[in-house]
Length: 217
Image 1 (cartoon, rainbow, N blue to C red):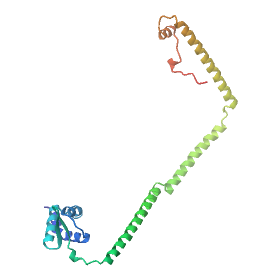
Image 2: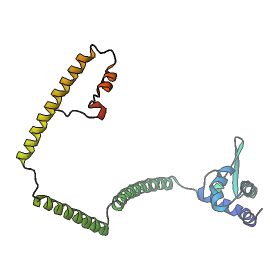
Image 3: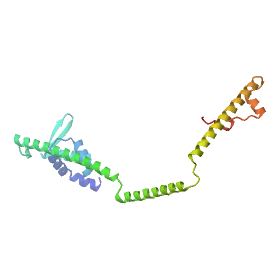
Image 4: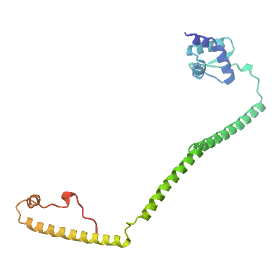
């Protein structure tokens, strides 16, 4: 056993006696070990030994509960509590419980407020953001100014003319494509080979060969 573990075991009876008196409720050896081992570094064997020692000395009480021993503080050492005192304690517990609930609710509100504040830009960050937005706006303003000052604007009349010519050429394209298709279909009626072979031999190239799609009207 290491020195620190030996020191903890030597002080175990005092630690356990004080714990049982403060809690004033029944515990098994396993319960006491689980509750105190991390804080005091007590091993389970040391806890069992200390509890048995305290019981033999009459400092605590033990009782068999099924196959398990239960240990608790000697109730004779505590003052007898009257019904009035119990009622006062119950009222105090109710008041304290209400206070705890109120404090918990306040904590939740403060946590929510804290999250909102931490997610909000600080004053220096906000100032930096404003400067960047001003710089961006200035760039857009300069760009708009240059566009307005340019002399090569397309007038509505010119735009309409281009649109009409586009419609004209697309219409002609559609017409000629239909005529070519009808001619090819007529030839293929008496042609002994496939359409693909005919196109290859005649050197005919289609829009589809170049992934070209006829624009919508």
